[in-house]
Length: 525
Ligand code: BES
Ligand code: MN
Ligand code: ZN
Image 1 (cartoon, rainbow, N blue to C red):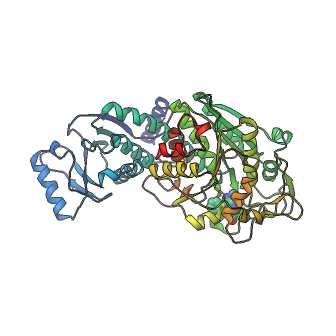
Image 2: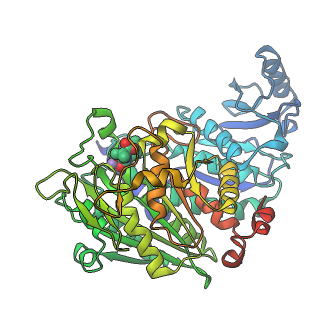
Image 3: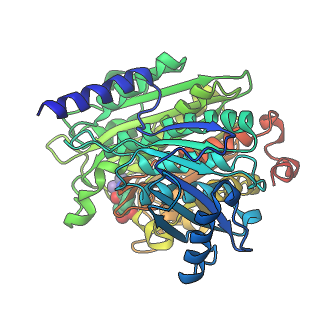
């Protein structure tokens, strides 16, 4: 009991010192060849170049060469061999990690190698790890990107677990020290955003509801973020009828949360995130245990856009970004929407609600309208766990991207490839929009049964997206992972924070005037 208590205290003390991110690992960069560590990590590429091998004494080099030969280790990306208690040096183990073709590594692939290392060392009792990245010059940020991957994979949602994750202390030897230190700072800001998104999404729905989400958003005020919360009465007063309708079946009233990082005077980038803190389906209740059980994650879009704003604020990025998060709990009660109801959106369009489980597009309709009305954005990207149909098409490997802007397709696809949060364009075509005709209202909230549901949902949103460039990301399936992946332990992924942060950081300053020109994307590619 006592040691447990002490451990908790020291974890708390650490959190106090380091309030911006809750990760447990520590990192330092240097340019030394010291072997003073518990674990040594070296890299080999597919051409059999073993980087930094000469830091080891000859007998350890020989041991490694033998191990390589006897284990058909070829330096393929992700291959690892391990030597335990090597002779002549104090380290307890040496790991040789295959990186494949060094020149073709994307940052996301370097992150994944970091994730692999973190996973490999999970059960290693000793804390000290020294990593040699010298000579890996194809990417001057190899060391810091590796650290990023280690941290992303080491995240734990430990709120409800007695045992804490044992901390590792990584010393990373790099060629360009100041470059990596600077780059790592930017990545740590993004990590803080990812971890916020994961924490919010992992939290059970009875703990994470519109008001508690708003309270978490308010904490970003400490970073200079302007946070505004519209209460249920404001939602009524401003005629956000769709958000009000989805939220009215719950004991916990809906909110509209806005988090604005005004880092430049340019017209803002608006990010609109679906914030359904639990999606029971409403009267069209989700019938199977498996489909309903994961629906605490139906606010992942909101978590992602809030996490992105946090990343920008920590970086003090010279960008103007506003996250708009319509938050509601979709429940069954005597106050709930009834299938067949007609509601009036803030924009004035009426919607016949033929399925109360198609609630995401309803809250987003008012969220998109609110973003346009109040912020006159240069571009809008909405992020939503919107349709099962998207999961059917792309699974959890890609997010679905819907937009009329080829430039946004290029920019978001490129950013996604860089970080390994991939997106794939799906059709935004009037033929799917035609399915949304209602006989008694301007629109209905469902398309043709059992057909292209992700596209008809996107066409629904298009009615509310305005004239400026707009993209919709359907992240259903991406927000939660049932099994460990290279960069995420099972649970919430924080999908999209790295994608959006990278996209925003790479946007040229003249986003407003150039977003629609081919030049912008050429410069980015
Ligand atoms: N939140 C769900 C979509 C979802 C499904 C997210 C699976 C993550 C994993 C959304 O609100 C929903 O219920 N969509 C319905 C719409 C249908 C009723 C038109 C769907 O896709 O089945
Ligand atoms: Mn639903
Ligand atoms: Zn939903």
